Length: 134
Image 1: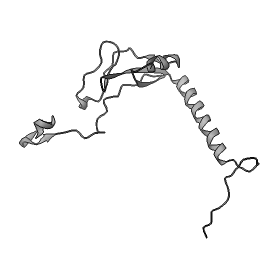
Image 2: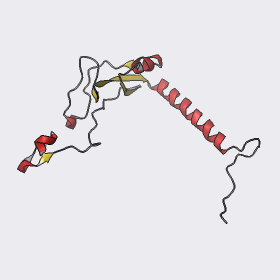
Image 3: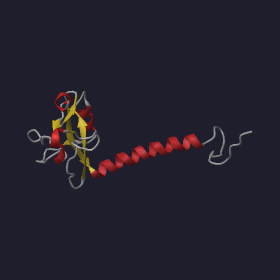
Image 4: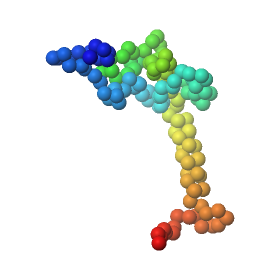
């Protein structure tokens, strides 16, 4: 049964398996002053990230969790397989720019949250009141 399912056999003929979620093959060392992330190389995503200030990380690194048993990088660019024949590209952006982007996202969230609390056409912020069930 282990051979049928593709699992290797361990001691006493028991199948060896690695539970989902216990391996992280998409890890890479961070670079000081930069924030890195893997971007799936599908459609125009890499170009979109480049337009936002990201660059492809080209230093000689080993990607993935050692216990995952995966190959490291291909050439000078980290390109791990992400399934379905797709690969990812390790990209990085200056930490300062990353923080600016995160602040802009948080500002948009706060505006939306404040709009949900505000009562329409009133100066009341909508954060008080009560609920009663009769």
